[in-house]
Image (cartoon, rainbow, N blue to C red):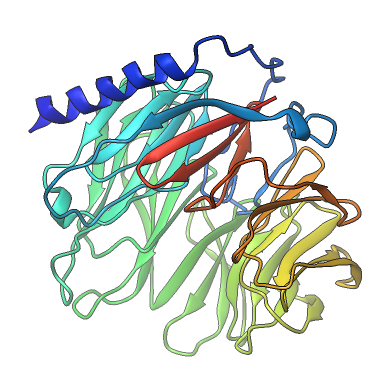
Amino acid sequence: MVRRLRRRVLAAGAVLTVLNVAVAVPARAAADPGWTHPGYGSGRTFYNPHETVINGGSISGVRLRWATELPTIEEDSCTGPSAPLVAGGRVFVTDETGIGAYRLTTGAPLWHYDFDLPDNERTPHLAVSGKLLIAGNTECQSQSDPHGGIVALDVATGRKKWSAGGNGPVASLVVDKGIVAVAGWSESSPAAVRGYRVSDGKLRWTVRDYWSAGVSAGGRLLVEGTRDQGIAALAIATGKRLWSKPYLYTAVAANPDGSTFLVADDDGGLVCLKSANGAKVWGANGTGGAVATDGKRVYRGFSNSMQALDDRTGKLQWSHRFGSGAYQPVRAGGLLYTEVEGQGLRILSAATGVPAIGSPFGATPDDTVVVAGGRLLMVRGDTIEAYAP
């Protein structure tokens, strides 16, 4: 099975070579830390402040630079493609058989980590920390007693460096301050948040009866009680409780500088809290689930529109109506990207909300786009695509 999967990856690389014939080399991006979590970083801001190549002046010239088919299997699989991560000139993405690494500039396959039982592996939660790719996963065959675990892979080779867990499912994962924090629960595994040392996978702390959405603000991990005890902030390095509040909130994002949390209240509204003490800064009625924040504005889909709220006050700065639902916003290079129901990927000026361009990308991506290292990456079906000027 492993040899067959490897041949599929290499075949995708052969197709890639044909697609790249006679394509000009895009401008070189400045040093870019990449896109190390599904929401950019540990704060899940969906904002890349380092993108300089794809911007308002170049977006009209972007085109497909490469497309690589991801491995698939004929048998049933519980796992599938994830939104890609980017670090060190590599793209990391899951597929029906495991996890693969691809060259950012060309899409060439670099390595592939195969799951032993693809039909019993849910799509992993991924994060990059230094030289390690961290993956947290859960079995999918058992509903009452699913086991979960974490594996750390060498980003250059895909070799396993360590594994840990076995204490229940992994429903969320975030890496900050040298700790990978995971959370989850099942009928047989009480809710808990656990912190493992990134360097070797050693368990450092456990906090029971809490759950985490995987948002860390400058080393403060927001957790919510599973027994109606409200929310709390933990020092992610030690698991020590820093403060608690009797609110029924769920973490959505953190400000890029780590000074505030954005949370959804029990009515679905958006609330801003100080990460240092949990004090309320502002609140905004309406959707609080999918947001992006760049430290100046908070972007959210609301009532068939995209809105920008002032980061300090929550007051509306601009609104652009689409006429149908807008999903997760992504902010990079002065632009705001969002998938709109029935309209595909839409691109706005982050400062004004004015449309920057009609979507040059064809069909709608299956997940949020990632903009890093001078490339716009998206997954459609079993193919990962890269666009650049």
